[in-house]
Image (spheres, rainbow, N blue to C red):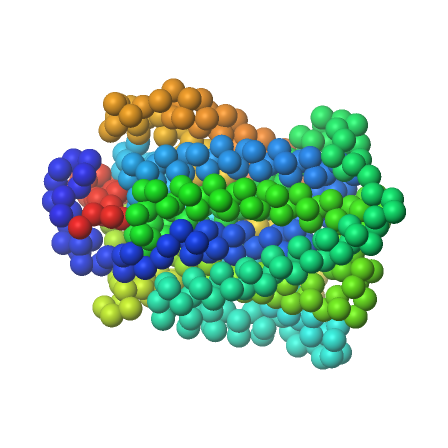
Length: 486
């Protein structure tokens, strides 16, 4: 096997530790991607704040965010078409700008996704606690539920990508069905006074300013859209199917979020203040619409958190695995189980670090005197915000990298619109959420997140510089394992 970019032989370790190819189809990776997004989980805990920020016309911010994410999807699809890899963004940036950028991206992406997964783990247990307490009165600490659900998910993931992906897709199917049913029932129930005001620009809070302020929050609803790329090595015809899955997922999620947001605003009779004050606005709408059958909305939340936990860890741990396989991270992370062909050490490392972050964050709350115990909903907001900053930086770097990659490796295929204009617009779209997260005057701990991100970037660049000097051949290994190479 040779590296298609340099023509040099792929290192033996990389050849031996390959994932199980041809296991997944387009539907599988699209379902896994949407499960990773976790529409119920994301919408339940994100839309209330979005509505308060953007106003009655908050669905317009979701439409704008869907368009922006589609621009990012073009970048991912173009890279995957040329160089499909389990390394995803790490490979794409590294091939474009060299090994130092690859290692830096590996560290930032790995940390960002691990912090984000810590948020998912916490909210999975938190939502179970909320549900069980509501319907039985039993109050078991959320961390116990989180540990139980995480252990079950890891046991499923190490069995193989096919079974765990199908389970995640099944969970996604349940949550989407429930969300659609509740939304349609709400709209029908309010048929006597439906309005198009949620789609009127004049109903945006503070006009364009409201759209701009709500836009970053709407973009966060889509995080996880890039799931398909990391599954390229296990996907049939990844050069074609990854792009299809990406655009299919973004399209379905955009339309779904528009439906959910319209139904939620309608269910609150366009009362944004009341919507924002509800603990989980969509569940409140379900209770008003379905009465005793509102438990279905709770079930959708449970399946959503589980689906996001399984699908997210599956894909994101593979980014870390590939970085270990190619020498950017400790080599043991690049181990593959000899029969199941799953990256068991990468999955274990990924989850263990996420759990340590939850513990460390909880200790920080205690030392800071903020509360006697850590609230999982608050932690979900805090951790997902911090993780998103690092992930958005990786998105930005990938958009900047695309034209350089095509001009360097595939100049005959370079197209100005597809490989320069669209990723340029995608980079601009990312600057909005980044600017929002870095703006001064935010409450603690959000005010120090940008400084922590800056410190992590500096540390990552420093580590990457030292590693590439110690290992001059690292540049030849970055992206050396192509998903569909024999």
